Length: 195
Image 1 (spheres, rainbow, N blue to C red):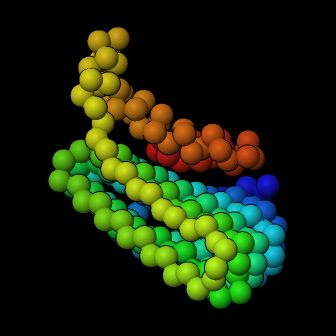
Image 2: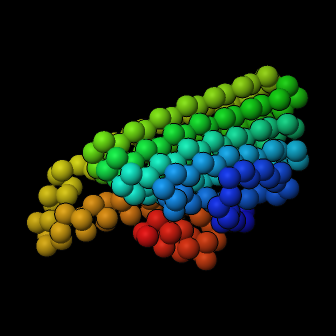
Image 3: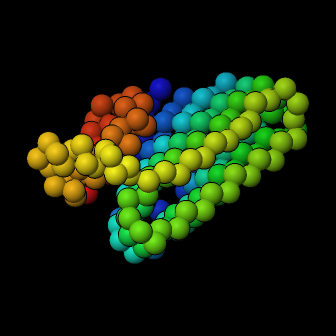
């Protein structure tokens, strides 16, 4: 499976012809709005959408991903990982659309949010439109805070609170970054979520 780091654009619409990981970094703008859509028009294609980033204080992201399955035997996993600092927000809409003839489709939405600061807002809306039989489509979402015990442990080892939080956030992202198959893309993404 190849890995592609997508350029930041407001509207991205792709029709995958081969197994591909599509990676998109959020968090560079104070108010970011993006629509990312995959249209599955070739049978047997498997894709993964990985969206991740840290929203700095007061920044917001409004993102919609759509995996539109139009033919049989396609697969898509969408991973949306975001860390929220003080007064930042995330509004995520994940869509799975399975057409009537797209049987044997397998599609999953996975949303993970890590809260670092206060006054954050996180909204997640999964939308599943399924017209076919013999498919698998599901979603999951979690939101959690950086645990005080973890910060205490790291600060007791000589790190500052900020350094401890940064290590925890890196670990949070690493669980999905490690899945990126192309090493050069993986390293660019690691650098991108640190900045």
